[in-house]
Image (cartoon, rainbow, N blue to C red):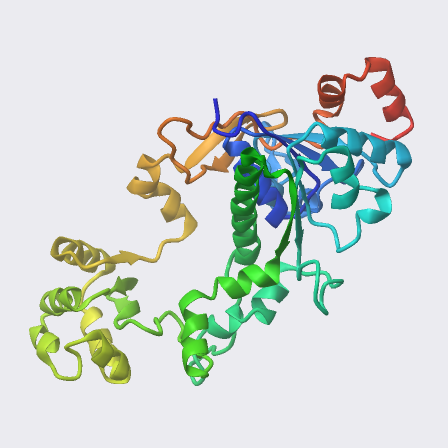
Length: 406
């Protein structure tokens, strides 16, 4: 029995931030009902290739993108631009604990599905709204996507090769990290609101914004600016506050060296055959190494090219110096630690037989994550949910389907 098996979530969101939060709640045992548009459903169902292949090696209609954020859910198709559809959503909300939505500010009010409207039918409802810029402020009405938020929110000013380097310029992170982080923060907020409700506080509205999350997650770089008034510059793979903490070339590629303290630097210098570095007045402390980065880094690069990546990793691990290779995804999922932790799982799928999934990183000793079902086909559970949750008769569901409300 999952930790959240007593909860029902009505997931009106699509794309990534909202569905990611819904999937986390579903992994933890909550019943998550994903409400989608009839015909097309979640936008990401069509965000391919690649698409999942069936047993004959042919593409299905299920895009890999969609499959990344929707397992353990039930898909119900409802056209809530129509009064009958709006009533169905209200009835589902009345029997739910949580609603997640990511429509534009005010977008659901036109259908009577905004927080104030649904609060009237369920005062205990936790209603999480996810938008690009939040419910207030001069940008509130704007649409917001991860890529643009990475730029506007400062992340891209910190990511990429520094000025003067070949290929210099801002670069986005290789996954939609702002969406993912917003999904995580939304889940934390939902659980906090549930704890408040369980203490007799009632339901509430949660206002989550991609921009807010992006700025909050600038972390030490934000504080570097706020404490100095100087905006940090792009450093490529280097760290603004720690040296050496970046990639270095080897005899057969590159590896990452992450020296976190002076003791580790001494050990690294010994393995590198340069023990004098640890006592050099330019490099003896991290503060000195940061100040003399331009001198030290070329010296390290000259030393690292004489051993292979595997040699550096094995020797530095023995010495207790954190380091590692730069793996592609094939190497990641073949890595013995990744295999041992079971980070790749498979679930039965109606079209493909089995569908691969990336496991949840949450490890609970008493209420572990359960992988109950694959990301659902569009509308796969419409009849079952309407009958079980709302007590509708088969004939009533058939009539709604005939009139294309569901």
